Length: 382
Image 1 (cartoon, rainbow, N blue to C red):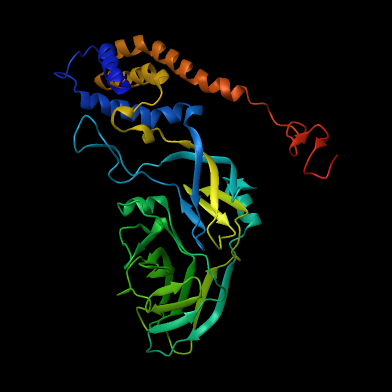
Image 2: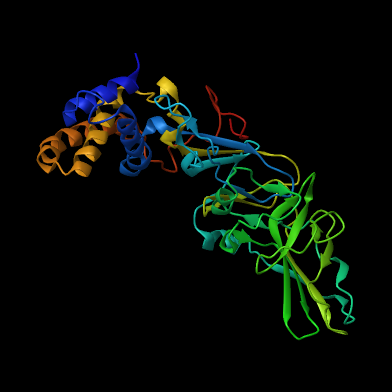
């Protein structure tokens, strides 16, 4: 049984278009996709879409963007070479509980309480070196290391037309907007003409040398060739190789700044701007597990596009509703609207039964350890 074909047939019955002459299958599939992707998860959170997201941390990397589907998306079964989704978030969002190597840790979705506990204090070295009025290339040291790397957010990842995160290349990708770059290391100096020069890491890493971050000016312009010997920061050792666009003024300080936390097992997670931030940064690979709602896009492939048969009529009426609205057939729209609402209630009822069966937690409702006939075990009680 191909539920997608059944949905197409049912949509045709509702909008009174029995064949491709006036409304093609491809156009109907487009309406189904738009309702399935854009509307369903906004109208209700289905228990059937609840899942677990897990990933392995990278040593030293503290920020992890929400994963995206690839730029090629999933193939459209009705249109060879076409696609139904690309660069679309894999998950609708994250929530409790979350674990680091099986240890439950706090989860935050607001910045204020998270940064109050884990403040991003800037470690500063006021005088890393002094300019002499002619020299432009310097080797400096940031005050504390390993330093927290800069970060490119999910919008910046999409701007690269890939899903690679973090970005690793031999040069800076200048297609990334400055609003998507959040630096972690700064090098500051005054040029011979009195202008202030700000060099910062770009959130992008040198190819084949992940601890090396590529440097950039705060206007986003590249600084010539990039290698392990010029315009990079080694987050692991704190060594900065920088080429200023102009010579720093003689007898004026060159200052370095960075964010620093002693690395270790992550003890808290902040979800903000489609990004998971770990504190402290991981020193080795750890398994992070967190509850999530899967985006419906995960199912849009071939004949398996609709995984749950109980939603077939709901999706049909939802797609037909969009078609009737776009064609201006408001009489039919209003006639079928109560039937659409009825199907939405029936679909939601399945999830509602599960949610309402969950007991509200109290201090007495959760067991504190495995139970035996003698009482709680493993807790020092008999």
